[in-house]
Length: 377
Ligand code: GLA
Image (cartoon, rainbow, N blue to C red):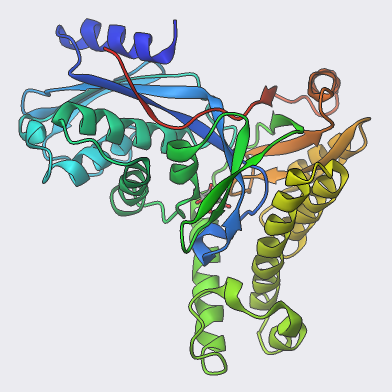
């Protein structure tokens, strides 16, 4: 059964009525362009084939949330952040409450998902975007995919309290099958880029305990660097606007580690644009080289890798027909993306699974899927 059917069944079984609406949204994998979305840079995410479905309906004055893979929760309505999984749909509901009269009587949600957890696939963005689409359908006020992405992003920043960039929600809302999206995170201009290579995702099994605090620290460092550079560049809004040709001189004026952070951001932004061009022209080897450079920069300059992620990357790079490998997502644990020649992904999955020394909890092929959609209840 697909997630939409399972979400509908779970809703009926849990709340003894049919859902008012159902929608589903995919996870995402970012091919390249890491830690640049919140600096207004370019990213190249693809939506996944795996989707999360959310069925919604009246909550009888409460927030009621059930999921196939998490505990059942019930709380007051309007909701307050609780630190539990229901914060994702609750945050979306809270943001949409003013415009969606249907939410006056609380919110019941049932969630079913094929998006693996803890693999850097942004299961949270999938949940937010699907919830926003389901509520919009229920309220009879259709929203553009871009609006749905923004609602999800605001819920994550304002309600959940994770200061993420817009990449995950945009990819989940606007992904197109077979393609990645080259997204300019400042103008939100985007265009599809055919993926053409095989993508293998590797779960490191490493807990991401430090992730949230370190992510916030990197964002503060970025703001600090901007403030230090502003006297010289009064019009500077984003780090990605620094002129690459003068980067050497600029970096010498910044204290460590801000110089390293800025160098990563400016170069990673350029690499992403080049990587999209490489995919468009079918230059897979060049794409792989850029993916490798991305990891090295995340490891040495942005310092968000771990020894285990580095070991997985090194092992993957040594395999036949692998074009490149890098940590994917925020880092500090999580997952590694391995890029393989077209048709070689299955073999690379087998080889990595067979690597006893690495003992990887999960290795799987990822294929670019389509973005958010309404589902028939
Ligand atoms: C997390 C965030 C994204 C992005 C990446 C790093 O996945 O949710 O917005 O910043 O980290 O590229």
